[in-house]
Picture 1 (cartoon, protein in one colour):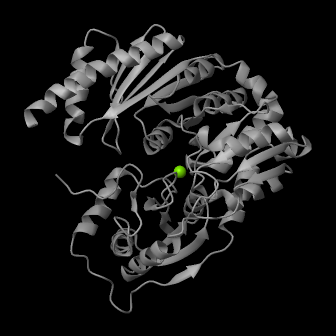
Picture 2 (cartoon, rainbow, N blue to C red):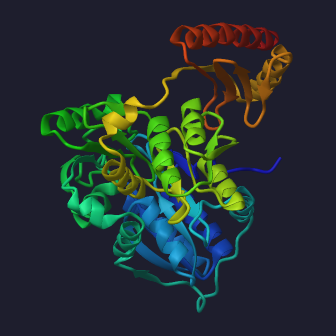
Length: 455
Ligand code: MG
């Protein structure tokens, strides 16, 4: 088996434990050796950003790559820069997205601005584990900074929405930047669109003093209160590197990622018909809304790079995940938080207040369960689940999805943690919970039985 260093979201670890300068330097050399030419480098706001970016830059230039430093920008800003500069071979983002502040990581961007696909990551890994030669003294790369990446990005986003209509609507937005990479681009976008923005946690403080950088409902209490108190038209929150955005409606209700995905899909389908791509874990609400708006849904395995690649392959209209990662192909084939915010503002202008739009969505209830499952037993448990439910309607796009008349249950091992997940959705909350409980018990009993001989 090949040795791996990249997980589902690049390389991540705790700073100066797993994720240290030596690792960033070595990884920089491998990426520089693989990409060559010019490589763009950016960071989110984490306290370890300069340390790791400097080490990565040293590695990149040692391998002969010229480094273009963009500083602290949102991940989609870096991706847009790489995509729009033909002479730039790729990008490196120093970020751990929504992880706690003691974490950091390194993620690679391909020449077209998309996340580096697995086969290319493998080539970087091969170099990482090999005895890499550095460039000769007269071939080592240089470092230069390139201001203005954010300006070009803002231009592009503003062009792709009806900016005049948004400007004349006189909207107010409360924006929570999670002290992360959205701190600059988020408020600047609102300014460009003539939207009055009340900001919270918009200082670039890498210790994330406001709240943890995952935009869950529990973390967004201040945003929700501010939307209610200010009478704003909506609230928006970004994750640490701003590739994801979640929303709060004008009544102060937190909208799940499924809901914002469905709402933006509907707004887009009003303009042109097409296919919406989403992972099998997304709510049936998305499919219901897309179908009734005249579109079709295509399901993929979980993970935004898979969604993005599928969208490129079939020339999809729109796509995204239930965690607030939305992809707009007319802009770029990657998740984009600020672009999502601009599209949501346009949806408010065209289709009315978000609370009204949300109330017309079909109602489903989702129960999420997880339980510890050792890495070595994950696949065995998945195979067992398939056998156990062999006489039911199954979908095996990712894990095992049991299809019922009034909902579904998805059983899949986590790709990043030693846990097994159960998602159960139904129009009846009791049904969703009951199925999740029964199946969890069945799987855990099996797991205990398979673990016993080891003790
Ligand atoms: Mg992120």
